[in-house]
Image (cartoon, rainbow, N blue to C red; front, side, top):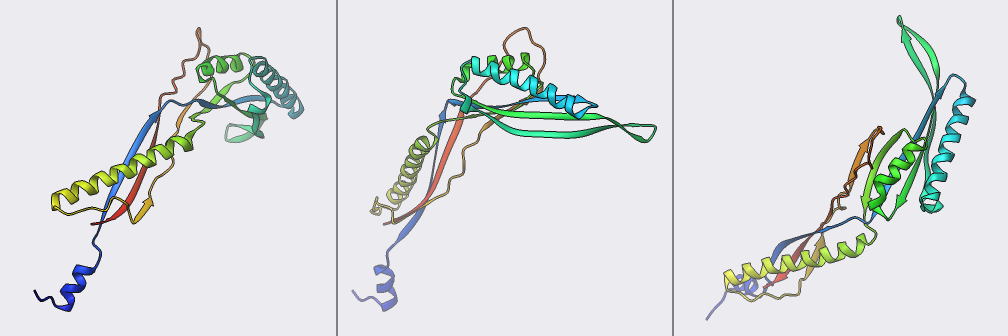
Length: 216
């Protein structure tokens, strides 16, 4: 049988197919990060600062006594802001607002509501940015990445079987196309409650996706 040069070149050229693979894993978070804020206001700046320092020290001591290590309590913001009221179109100085914000990390996420209530009872008047994460995130992501590659191979094999061709299962190229897993955030203002503040960590979905090329 005779083949032209173009036909021979086309037959000798490697044939490549591209398949995308995706995978996701649902995991329960095991770390929680909470921002706790003490806000005070007074016409005297020094008075506002002293009151704020007293309340925040009381909050920190209560957290330490509850078993949270000192290295897991970190100051994340400290602000002094002059406040004004507008009366009859005129700006009238009201006083100074002092806010001190700490970030608390803890592994016993089942105690999140109790720790929030403890902080509020000792002077915290704003709770925000409750963030749930996982300690072994990279390990779980690697598992999802492996599953994504298997998914790409399964798709490529299905195509090869349909075309009745042999597929080389070892990919010649793999491109990772994953993004960071989503985090859970909750924000609310502290309010009086007769029971422990309910906090639900839910689950975190870790996704991985790849683009793989196979010879056939």
